[in-house]
Image (cartoon, rainbow, N blue to C red):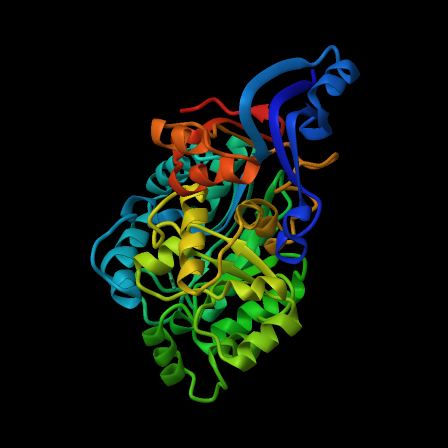
Length: 427
Ligand code: GUN
Ligand code: ZN
């Protein structure tokens, strides 16, 4: 049976970094008709009620119906070490991250965290994530099995590392290739799951491993490839030592066939002019992780790049300090302010939905409300706390009404979540 959701509706018909607010559409008394897991119609509540008289009605009042959030860069195995104190990137990896990732050799621990993580993000309105697993193949099985059970569209891959990581957390060029290929063949395209080829970053991969994963990507050109790029200055200096033959950090990937459309580069803060030009020319995606960049002390992403290439938004759990894409939009706003750029609420909302979907090359399936798209939706209460409600009460338009929730909202603002056309039971 079809479901008819009533409320305010926000959707996009263009890119607000190019077209401004003309790229967004707002229905004050709107409706979304969901049937067979997809969006069957979107329009005024009154006319859709007439069009679908038999549909089950879910009246969300003044709440805002949006596409579910798309978190384009996370490490689900870092769920339990979120908000760990006092370290910058390399120390943070060695002190907190690697010991925790070691535990994922145990499949039951991986299952436990994968389920916990996906329930956390669903409660915050996030319906798709693109995740790193650990080097253990079982950790990939765990996240895909948990996503499958929840009907979610999820992207993930085995993290490959063959140097500069502790014993027990290293593979080899050959085993990374073999394990990644086996997992890709097992999971890619099954239900709503996609495999992502995942070298962690150049400091933990030899050129031989990067080359092996470049070869794998040539065999399976339709999948995505994710890694990290130019997050912190000490990391960049380390890459320079490890790859003396490379022109710059990006070149360590480019030289091994890891730079083209479908490449997702997390962080990408401290870029040279050559790197920016090559990323744009190659059609790569950059993933901005603002709460991570301030929490780990990395730097300020240049959102001006969003006019030239695909930019997605992400929490970077657990380097990021929140599971919430609302908090992450607030982080993006604050980082941009520190660079003298004021991101409009339309741009922030687009980054967390359609922008991230576009970075994952999934903009035709998720991240927007349009006929035929998969029905992954978040219903957002724009007055979820007294402090937010009193600020929103002053609003003269949708954007002013939305901005207090962007800046101060959390899981309490998420009134309902729909995944693949089914309402999620809040845990
Ligand atoms: N660079 C390489 N690995 C990681 C990671 O797990 N988190 C972050 N923030 N940066 C990384
Ligand atoms: Zn990361």
